[in-house]
Length: 214
Image (cartoon, rainbow, N blue to C red; front, side, top):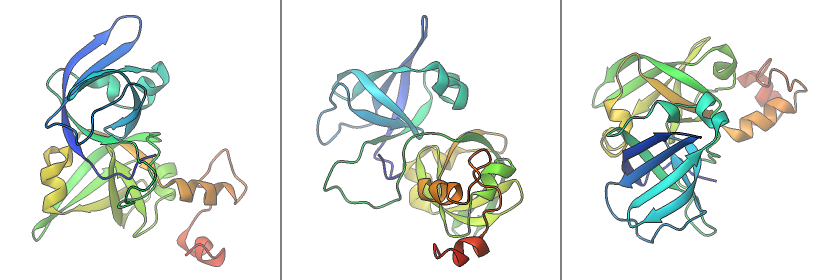
């Protein structure tokens, strides 16, 4: 489990596409405690297992399923990525519950200036958008953010200067693809409404309030 609070920016050093996808990543600065083989690290919001590590470098094998659902397979050497190590018992829970299980890809459709801040509008499709609620949580490329705008097939989040400077979100441009993960609590709430095939069908702020979740 993760919190969506990015700890390091990483640089992709090697991508191997032999029998399966393997990525090698260097963190921009040393970790406070050494990486360990077998631990989980979220790379742009995708939970990966450390196969080999040395200092700030680690290598991870990527499942074909992960490649098909996320942007990990599109990474090239030199690409910058958001990194977060898995939450440990006793760690501060500063963001929200993030599993590292990407629901879908989204596309940056608009960047708006709001004083010192920026609003990022992401087109995500109707199913994902229906699971978002105003002031609820959403994860973009591993970053925990608060929903500040909603559309039928899109949502918006506001980015403060710190988020833009300490994550890769500050470099996003219109047309860029991003990994999206919805709030896991919202997913369970949606399933409680009895539609597992379309988990967000019929889920609205009004229905959540009537059920006592808001």
